[in-house]
Image 1 (tube, rainbow, N blue to C red):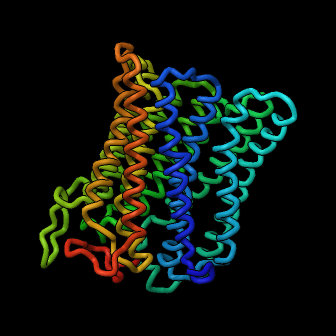
Image 2: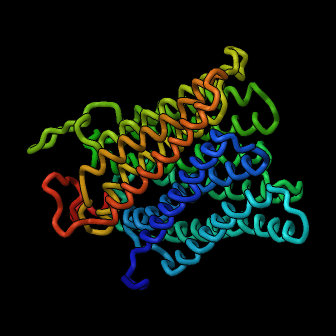
Image 3: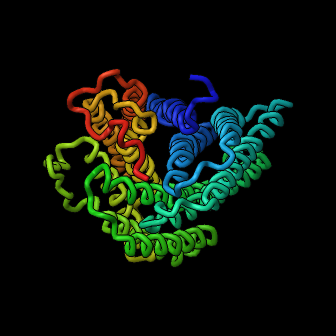
Length: 448
């Protein structure tokens, strides 16, 4: 397929998968494998861990979101994508920035002396600027697209979708702006390691400001179509978004100023927003029955992707409440942000992509899913990766010795296999679909 006829979303998705398989799950697993083998974890380990987390948030999830968004949002609005030729520079800027980040940050943290240190420092700062430039251009394209006059029939019953996307893309830009500032201070300190405060700011904006609103918006449009949920309760979703923004603001203010009261209330509010989203979407509720088919959510692997994904989000809400109560002095502080981050990133976001992506992406390409059976593999391995990553942190004990590191390394391996199966399933469609294939026919190319 030539570049002129290649769908805009496709290279974003392919690069997203490439980053997940390399700097994402593979590097994450390798870091813990090194620790389990007794390799000293110096500053290089911390920097490599930050780079790995950044790739997961902005490479694996971020590129996937923008690839799908460039295809999905114009159709939802009933317009054409503005300046489609500019999506190539967007992809190039984001890809260069991400690649520099995962290669340069660990190298700079090794403490190399001489002229090479200056070159690496400049390259690391440029990585943040490239990403910020790519995000700015991408958001400008989407803003121009959504400002076009919509087709009248598309104005009906869009719900709060665009409010969620507005919050998401503003937060994405702010997260990358914070990332660029954090990298600048990191190289000024000659360590290559971003301060914990700036790193936490970037991660919180990415998770709660960007990924969760995008996921809820997409879920509100796709779940009734693909998973036979009832129509979302938009008032609860809007209330959840308002609580989310308030909670995120309080959390960031508390964390940046060491104000435990604001930070604790903010975390509890974020948990409340998650509860409102789950109830508003009805993901754990009854399903609409189809005229000629019995809907059995617990026997459908793609339904189970969505259910378990939101189950991990609910676990994150519990962790947030415990963290918040600990900060308010009502419980003894016992949890680290690592459990919360990975319950959302490795659990909620990744498993939701594996499930909804198996519906959406073959439909975008007007091809059938390669194998319904492979979706059972992504379901089991995706949840296994999340479990192995989160459980050792939640139940950490000094008596385990090196067992937690070995388990965490296993999480990376399970994640790599899950992403590989997903990539094969959405890109390797057969000429004739399997008899068991469902809801992946060309007729369902878009939920818009």
